[in-house]
Length: 87
Image (cartoon, rainbow, N blue to C red; front, side, top):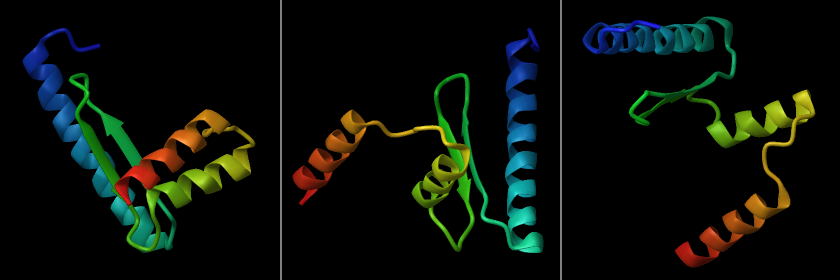
C-alpha cells in the first residue's frame, strides 16, 4: 500500500486510466465482451462496458459460467419492486 495519500491518489488515477484503456482495447481488438467496475477508496464508481453488451448481461454470463450466485431471491424481489415503483 502506498502510504502517502497524494501519491496513492495519483497512482490510482493513472492505473485506473490504464486498466480502462486496456479493457477498451481488448474489446475492440479481440471482439471480446468486457466489463470493468472499479471503486475508489472514497467509494466513487468507475466502470466500462463493451459497446455491444451491457453490464447486467456480462454479470449474467459470469453467474452462468462460474456457478456463483450473484443475485439471490431477496435481490430479485427488490429489483422487481424498484422497477414497479419507477413505472
